[in-house]
Length: 496
Image (cartoon, rainbow, N blue to C red; front, side, top):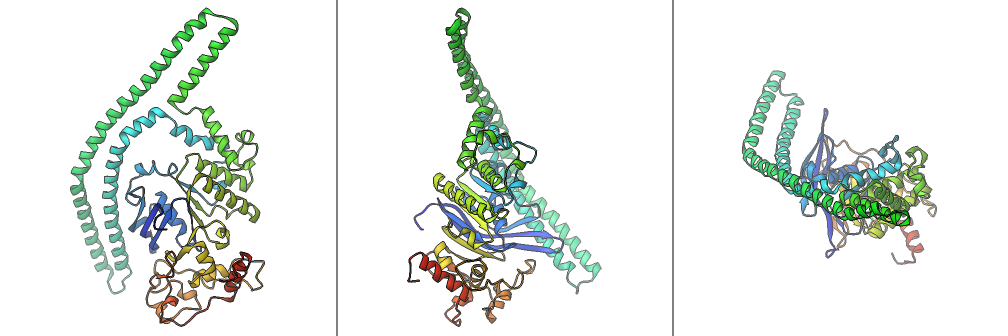
C-alpha cells in the first residue's frame, strides 16, 4: 500500500488518565495509517483503548486525560496539538463520528428533521462563513499557540502529579518530610509555569493584534458582501415591481411568480433556507434507507426502531459530507439481523461516497466482510496488524487466536473458548507482554520483556515472542485452524 494516499497517520500515541488511585496508561504507543477509501477495523476487548483512540482523533478527550506523546497527522496538521478553534473546522465537517447507542446520541424531545438540518442551517449562513473564512487563519494560529503553551503547562502538571503520587505512596518517607517535598515541588511548578507564560507572552500578544486587525477586516468584508447581494436583488426586482403595479390578471401572476423566485434565490444566496435544508435532509434520509422520509422527517426518536435510529445518526454525520467516518461500535445495541443491515449500509455508503472509515468493535465476526485491514488492540497497544485476510487466515498473536475462538460459528463442531482472566490494571501495566497472564502459550520472557513487532509480510505485523526464531513451535488452537480450513473451503481456496 506504499503508493496509496494516507488520510490519517497515527504515530506512537501515548495517553494517560489521571485518577485518585494513580495514572491509567490507556494508550502505550499506538501507530497505524488509514488509507484513502479503505475500512480499517480496530478490534479488542473493553478497555483495550479502541474508543480512546477515536476520541483522541476527534479531540473530545475528558478533562483528566493527558497526551504523553505521539502525533495524529490529518491534512498535514498534527491533531494532538491543534486548538478547539481548529477542531471546529474538522470535527463533523471533515471527520465524522458515530457512537454506539443511537438513542443517547439523539435529543429525545426534538424532531428528527430538526436534528438532521440543525448543522446544515448553522453552517449554511454565507455571510457568517465569509466572516469566519477571513478571520479563521489568524485566529487558529493564535489559538494554536495558546494550545501549545497549555500543553507544555499540562505536561509540567502531569509530572508534578506523578512525583506527588510517588512521594505519597513511598512508605520510607515520613509524613512531614513528604509534605515538605510536595510543597517544594508545588513551588517549583509555579515558577516553571510562570517561566512558560513569560516566554510565550510576546508571541501570543503579537498574534492577538493580528487577530484584532483581521476581525475588523472580516467584519468589513462580510458587510460589503451582504450589501452587494442586497443591492443586486433590489436592482433585479425594481423593474418587476413597476410592471406589477401596471398589469393585472395572468400577467400579474406571472410577474409575482418571478418576484417570488427572485426572493428565494436571494435568500439562498445569503443562507441555506429551512426549505433547502429539509430537501437535503430528506435526500440523505432516503440514502440511508429510511422509508417515507418526507413523512418521518417530523417524527421523534422514540417513534423509530433501534436500527432506524442508527440510520438517522449516520444520516446526520453524512449531511456534512466528511472525508473520514469513525464508527465506535455502531451495531452493539442492535440485534443480529439489524446489525447485518447496518453493516451492509455502511459498506455501501463507504463505497459510494469513497469514504475512509475507522470501524471500532470488540467482535472480529462483525467486521469479517467489511474490513480492508484490521488492528487488534490489547492493553493500550496494537498487538497484531494486517490485511483482513491475513488476520482471519493467518493469525499469529495468541490474543487474536483467543478472539477468533470466541466467535460463534455454525460450521464448526468445536466448543467455543472463552478468554480466561481479565485485562491488566493499566495503572501498573505488565512489564512484558500484557497478554501473558491470560495466555497458555506464555514463556518466561513474556513476563520480563515486551515483544517487538515481527514482520510476517509487507502488511502483516504481530508483537509476540512466539515469532522469535528461538521460540518453540506453538500451534494455533484447533477451533481456529478448523474455522480457517472451513472458510478457505467455502471460498474455493483449498490451499491455505
